[in-house]
Image (tube, rainbow, N blue to C red):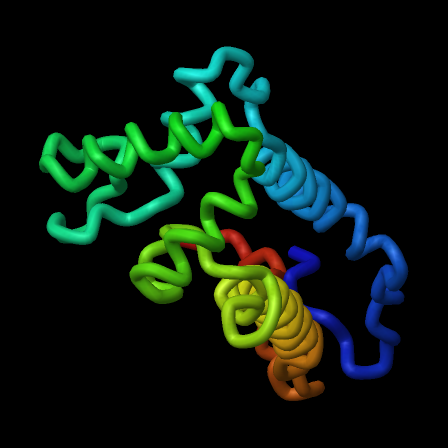
Length: 173
């Protein structure tokens, strides 16, 4: 039995530098998910699709947590018609959003701006994910170090084990 390590024998060397290999797939999957999650699907091609895409970004003023594109309220229908009219007049998506922001306030947009305090909404999940991964790495390293620095067998313990492993004399009758 080699489970008991001698106090005089040095501990086997701890492999350093290869720990990142175990984290490489996790990091690759995380980056891939962030990249693919941020990519848009194909851009809207027809005018009706563009109107709906813009209406989905504007909150219905009467409904709770529903966009003007998904709501059946009369005000949402009017917003969709107004968006179509503004698009036919050549206004861009930003100009249309700015109009509704000026009319109803910043809360009318369902996507927060990427600047100022709205930038925190976009950055906070990434920061939390990075901190969580760093915490896991630190915890795993601490657990590994604790397991490697565990108690060693004393010479008295080794003597007990060696006596127990010696063959017993045959029974004489």
